[in-house]
Image 1 (cartoon, helix red, strand yellow):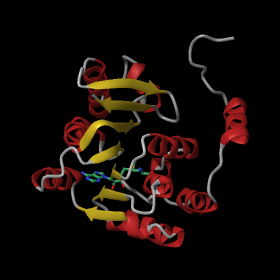
Image 2 (tube, protein in one colour):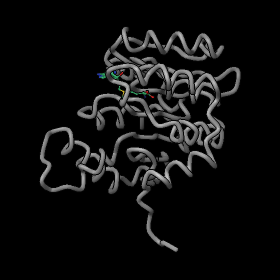
Image 3 (tube, protein in one colour):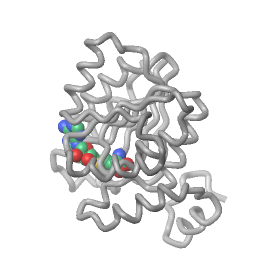
Image 4 (spheres, protein in one colour):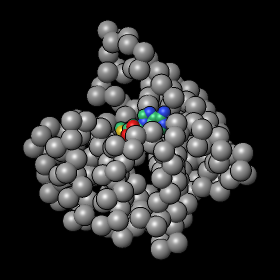
Length: 220
Ligand SMILES: C[S@@+](CC[C@H](N)C(=O)[O-])C[C@H]1O[C@@H](n2cnc3c(N)ncnc32)[C@H](O)[C@@H]1O
């Protein structure tokens, strides 16, 4: 028995998927289509999508933010878990990436739950704050450009309600955050961000070692 988190080798990871993944067929189709995309590795892992869907249901979320859409997997996983009157504001700058997202949202019958805003996410989030939407979101997923993580986090913290949840992707950055030899800007930004959250008394915190690392921060 281990009393620290297991490193998953391929066999154990495949076992985990075999005994727990319940991926809806439409998400499998989207994942397969995205695998052929040159940037396909940007998509979240399926077990992470399932975990986020569970979180959204646990907190009874109705209104959420998806910051970094790409081909739409995280938005679709959350949209399928939201009630019929649920809403996602989805942020991306790429018409090209998100055209596939729109297609699969339509096929899944959830397109009317997702309001895609094509603009720098900071602009979209600042617009929401200026329009008086602070404290009105239940859940936010941050998965866009890493250099803006802290900016997205500060906006998300305004926009979610007390007890709402912010989930931040790639916080383990393929292990590079723990390698002192690696000093590039993006890695350092993620390190700084992780350290800031560790000390941030505005939230309750857990860094979950799922996929590339997912920090959960609940606004107190
Ligand atoms: C890692 S991918 C998102 C993956 C997605 N969550 C999924 O489940 O497949 C990051 C996305 O952030 C978008 N992005 C990059 N910079 C951005 C910005 N300044 N504002 C909004 N989106 C941005 C990219 O176009 C890309 O689609």
